[in-house]
Image (cartoon, rainbow, N blue to C red; front, side, top):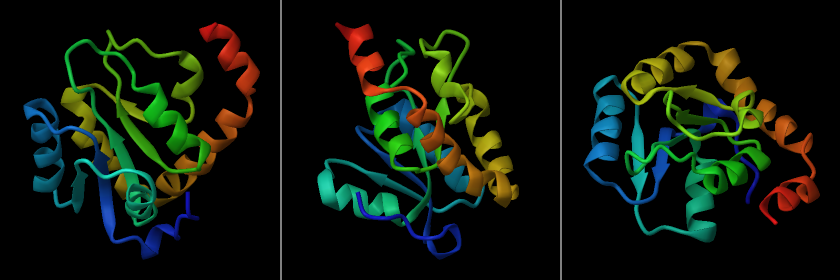
Length: 149
């Protein structure tokens, strides 16, 4: 992934990539109506996607379905690269507590409010990406693979 630019030079407030169903669309529209510049990417992968990530102040993760399974593969990649991530985490979301400290998370219905508050605290927003990256460094890949096998 290319090196992200400084927060002040990024021209996209919130990036979302993935399939956009009604549930996700409503959350993205909610962010836009609050004055944030939102960029949804559909069928954009690899270097092209990474170029958009580098232009974005924050990447948002929203569950596609009501199954509430945390999208660890998507978020792990971002955290590893020091990208600030806001994610939906509800009381029923299945998420390893290890990740929580490196993410900004709120329930679906509070996600837009929380992201707006995060943007108002520029220091907290600037610290989020590096915090997530440091958190990932604490868990060796061998530990992750061992839990899968």
